[in-house]
Length: 442
Image (cartoon, rainbow, N blue to C red; front, top):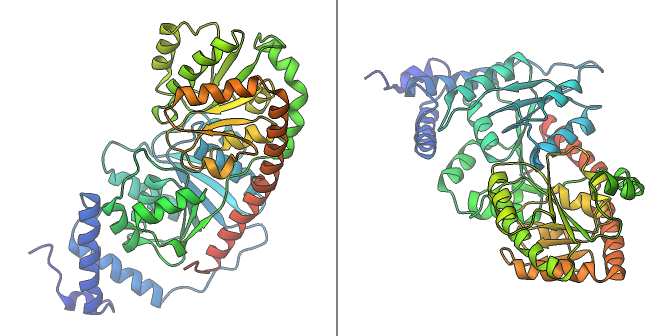
């Protein structure tokens, strides 16, 4: 049969029969997990394994890089849209550029920020992934690895990590640093992910989680051993954000907000997981106590039309502003009194950290990693999907300037202490350096 490989075939290239049997089992498990095969046949799979062993035995000595030849770190993500993972990837590129050569591969589409990223000197390749399992992504990643001499991949979120893992089945095999930013809702155990992770993760690979709750989910639902996961909190430029506070009056004039109007702001992608309907319903209650209160919503996404309908149906047009995507979020935060976030699932959202750094008390849902960011000393945690609790919390802060000021002070100090981007950049740089040196975390 064409797909059948005898042990003697493998021995001819120096690969023992036991490796052939092990490879056959690995291939079957990967195919079962993926639902299809990224390989043409058993023969291709086994020859790939044999060739890899041959290259290892007769490998070339390490290349001595010159002082100007930086290690190439390629960040793989869905797109360069305006989202938490995407913003973090861009900030990492800027923060690590002095030590590494940074490029991007977008699996799905370029995204709104691709041109600005290219303008900063970072190459961006877009694959254009098709629905379902798209083998073209594997070939594209393999070509990118070879043609651009990628030394290590930094894969943001599970799907980019998954494709990067599978792309190493043959050819060059740079190590991977997988960064998990958040979880799906509902978050369920995935045996397919467990099989793929356990078979394909190498000792040199690293797994980073942006928060403790995210790390726990990786252990519980992805089957990744806890010893392999390190928590590295997201960070922002806390000093620069704090320095913007003097533009409050200017921004309020731009947005046509009265100087004495109580203003809440929500910065989040317009997506069902952010549950804007809860914050809008909560603001209806707030308006009963504070008729001149305003809610500013920053962001864009698939829920925009539904949100606009809700606003119209509940007569909230005078009170709610939809600003769309903005690149001056720290300036907008300076015009607000309270930050709100009504998500049903979160990792460690950068927007909340930015709000705390800007001196805003935060009213957020008690989900995911949010309790790791917001405490009773810096804001208010409320149950998800509970407009009444959120509305009461926002109204109480509008009514108590002294408490707002105390929470704001504590929040700014907490952001500077735990979520400053300089510490984040330093830890990512250390992890990448350790991976490139061959050091194993497990």
